[in-house]
Every structure is written in C-alpha cells, then in structure tokens.
Image 1 (cartoon, rainbow, N blue to C red):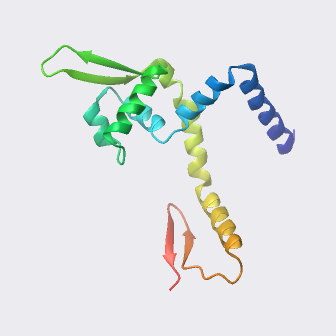
Image 2 (image 1 turned 120 degrees about the vertical axis):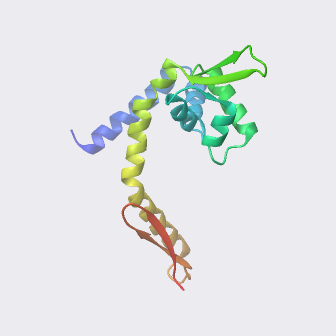
Image 3 (image 1 turned 90 degrees about the vertical axis):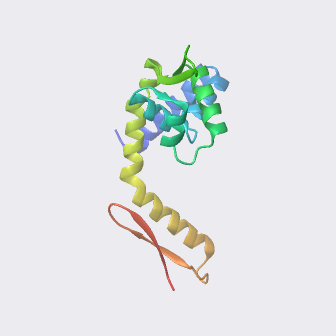
Length: 156
C-alpha cells in the first residue's frame, strides 16, 4: 500500500472517529491532551504521587493558577486523582489514574517522532520563513542544524 493511500485512510478514519462520537467531547479530549501542560504533568505523576508544590517545582514556567486549573481539568477527565489527607496541616497528593497511564505509549511514540524529526521541521520552518521574507531580505541570523541540538547563529 502506498504512503498516499495510508495517509488517506488515516485521515478518513480520524474524521470518522470524530463524526461517530460526540464531536464536542472528542475535540475537548484532544484539546486536553494536546495542551501545553497536561501531558507533562501526567508524565511527572507516572513516576509517583506528588504534592502541589512538588509539581510546581518540577514544571518550570507554569504558574500556580495554571497548575491548579490543569490539575482540576485532568481530575475532571479522570486522568488524575486528588487525595486529601486529614492531617494538620492538610496534605494533598495527586496521582495518575489507570486511564491516565494509557496515554503513555501513544504520547511516547509522538514524542519520539517529534525528537526524530526536529531538525527537519526546523529546516522547513527556516526555508519557509526565508522564502516568505523574499530574496532581498536581510536575515539577521541563520540556523545550524546538528545532532543533538539546533543552534541559532548571528550572521553578523
């Protein structure tokens, strides 16, 4: 079977999944697992239960408010549980659920794809941007693509 045929079948099956199920719920689930923080938090929680402050420390760039909102949404979807311990001061722990754990394999495959194709995607972006700027534009930096990292180097 050709790559085009496989791609066509995949697109049709994705569209079919969306149509056969409640489209609003389907899109909201994809939004949840595709947002900036959810998969990172689930990945952290797969290592074991964490308290709020531990998650805050382990997730650079997330605000307290965003962490609260994301954990609440993950709990609502059944991907994370929140346990309150009757202690003084109160202790709260978050754990990934079995449903949340089922995301690991497909997400890891997606992450590996992203890592494997990072240099190509950056080269494509650079080519697109260069083409969009036109032949007479004065680019002030270029991209050096190499393993294991991508570096921006000033042209000056």
